[in-house]
Amino acid sequence: MRRVEFLVLIAAGSLLLGADIVKGQPPATPPGLANRPQVLPADRHDRSPALRDLSPIPPSAEGRQPLPPRSVRRGPGREVPSLTDPALQTSAPTSAAPTAVLSFDGVNNINGVLPPDTNGDVGPNHYVQWVNLSFAIYSRAGTLLYGPADGRSLWQGFGGPCESRNDGDPIVLYDEHADRWLMSQFALPNFPKGPFYQCIAVSQTGDPTGAYNRYQFSFSKLNDYPKFGVWPDGYYMSINQFTCSGRIFVNCSWAGQGVAAFPRTEMLGGAAASMVYFDMESVDGTLGGMLPSDLDGAPPAAGTPNYFAQFDDDAWGYSPDQLQIWEFDVNWASPSTSTFTKRAELPTAPFDSNMCGYSRNCVPQAGTSVRLDAIADRVMFRLQYRNFGAYQTLVTNHTVDVNGQDHAGVRWYEIRISSGTPSIHQQGTYAPDANHRWMASAAMDSAGNIAIGYNVSSAQMFPRISVTGRKASDPPGQMTVGEGDIMLGTGSQTHSASRWGDYSLLAVDPADGCTFWFTTEYLANTSSAGWRTRVGAFEIEGCSSGGGGPDPVEAPTNLTVTSVTASQVGLSWTDNSGDETSFHVERCTGTSCSQFSEIAQTGANVTTFTDTTSPNTYSYRTRASRDGTFS
Image (cartoon, rainbow, N blue to C red; front, side, top):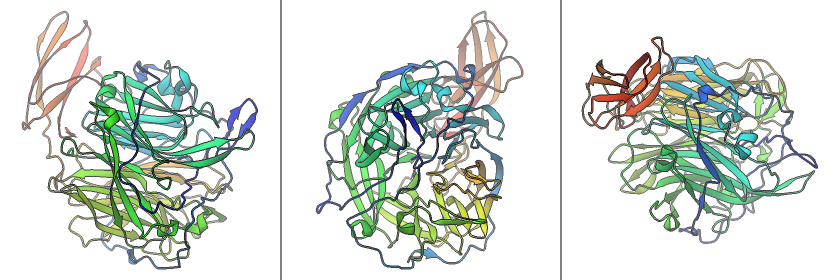
């Protein structure tokens, strides 16, 4: 969520948009089954040219300024007494820090906006990062391949607000079982009135510089803070909804949780698509800040619904502090019969999410009296899902006050789902010293080890980027892997809005199921909003693509040209993995190639392919894949 939204220019003048979750008293009897969904077709869709053939639109400073601070309103509810978090980890790990793999700078504040909303994901050959308001595509070694480009670059020739607007709140995710990329941001051309739009692009191959299937969906309420999860039957989204009024001075009121599912099969193929959308305001207006689950590793059993989660503080009228787990069960054969159902209310160890009275000005920095927004009112991106066979896991986190004195720490959870029933397997609050930790993202590797990436700051420390973790065999509720630094900040942010990022992203490498890739922000010099971003990859010792994740896939060998005619090239190779391994055939023009594009995927254990093409000089390569793991 761009909680610092930007100036939106309209004919009557310039307006500022505020976007905060506002919750009231929960209903006396929390509902289970939601109202019936709306099934809404995309306003438009097309198949784009290859992105690499479209000139990047240069990023530009659009003169947009951040919104002054505005309190998140909660209630009615009771005040939480000062307390020490019972799940608090009070001592720092003594073991070695995670093993660093690489680190490189991502997209910086080239658009002159605040905050960045940093996120990025990794595939077998690329890393893609998108921030407000530009994206870039890198090789896995950190070499820039495309961009940084204005977000509109992806929508050239599409028409409508997706092409004309660049309003941010971006998301990029790698769909490892399809070897595709999902990229999305919203468009608000009519603000403060609707309709509002969600722009979604799904790559046609595993190459993010290639062509995309592009879609535009519309909403009558403001679709703020869109968050996505990849699932076998769909792409799932949560939005924080608002209704806004006014012209010069805009007032936006909380309008409930929205959730939507988009048909993955149709969008992978570029076909017409309709979303299944639930507006939850009339069912339970207190719902908000949900996340959909995002799949890593082995897929769930066929028919498993996508899980959504949110946390609720007893200070808001809930009892006790809890995680809510919901199930989005889509019937694509009859979408109007789809359901969104509360599955569980899971009591947590008590926590206090009231950071600085929700004033936002909470996290101290070196060399300035300006404090930063802790974003303590929602679970933080992602809600990661893994299937270990006998049970499944959900991993997520949120920021809490660890001692009743506005000391920010990271509350993290591992939820296990066994026989369809979710429960909290372990939880902990990581704040082992006087420094503040927030803006976290948590994930689990294929061996069951958990890592957390986050920012660290104090009155004596510039905000830095750090990571920690735990091994699956360690005592529950503790981060046991020493804290490691991905980037030491050398400056503080002095803008009066106090806005830091609204989310970060910790991804797990699909190529090995073990390497974590984390991206968030830092400053090299003290400035109003001179943020930069960093991408860091690291591993926790003991992961070897085991623990319920995909088994290692041996790379194919002996790629051979078996025949050549004026219109065909025959290929064959050796399958070294078997066990339902399929192969991705890629091609580029010329003999010195760095930009391969996928041209085919074979069936299981098929080791031949005939490329029908026009005469030219080509280079080919093949990649093996099984259960989302590539080689």
